[in-house]
Image 1: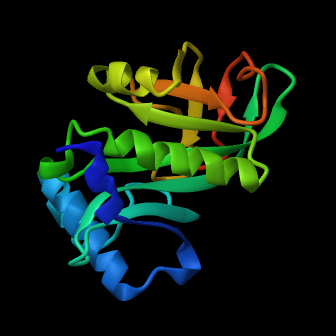
Image 2 (image 1 turned 120 degrees about the horizontal axis):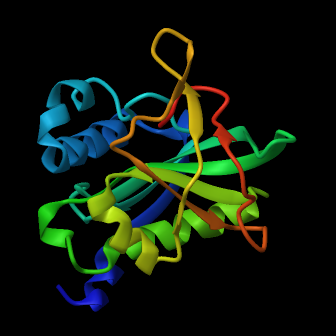
Length: 188
């Protein structure tokens, strides 16, 4: 698909409180298409562990969500001194099959980071499987080698599951701070 076809898409930045039931349903349909193993979860809600603060969506003229991602705005701590940092936690990134490998996810991510900058957010943070590192690296994200602590489903402090890698991108900083990270809540 040629990038010129992006012109037919309606790109939206929507705060969570403004998500309509129609858009919620359309995003969940896209999530189910792209993450069929999580069909049960995404048929009920649009997130794994932490509700989002806002969403970026690219809609086709018929209302189908071609691509989307969500942002969880969160204060985290980084490093031994526990420096507080506001991050845009990126989650649920997808493009439905016919829009994959077109650069659409790159476009949606760029909109998300531009909007995060306007909101005064210092950095982006995401968790992904190692197989996706190359895709996010292409967009400027860098792998972080640090321990990441979160709250598990019981509320206890736990390490982020080892299957995930952590990637960050500075938004209003020169570089992401070094040191262990405490998500100050669930992962996303």
